Image (tube, rainbow, N blue to C red):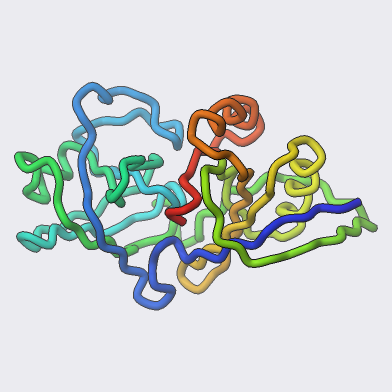
Length: 226
């Protein structure tokens, strides 16, 4: 049984020590009011929430508008933004609090305040409860890579046994590269398997619907931006 995959090293786009990210933020248009976010919650413009491409759902972040030093603490409950050059989408209320509602976009600093899910100090880990046989053996071929194109991120895991089981199943079902993104949050490593090898977002979308049934937290990513 062979499960070959490439290893992609990425630290959430954050420094593993300071865990600070800077970039441009925008906010949700009114038409998204009541729409379902990637976490399953409905978007409400009055709540202090945000969309980030990679931070686990439930992560609390402090966002600072670099133009006026206004700050607000937001909870990540969605994926995005998927516009080149932007790192965060915030709710309408957050944009007003940060003072860039009229401008529509702002340069911001993002700092992790709490990696928990709001109910304790436990790091959020999206794991499937997967049974592992007593004698499971995997032959692995691992290489560092700088991927291009688009991929589908399936979730975030901490247990390597679960990760290997998922990779084995994916490699048997899809003739695509299997990438593993290594993320470090508060000194703890997490692993995100990605199905890669799509030349554009449209081709990734054609496979996304099938994967979404088994991986409800899956979303499409631009691999060149990881």
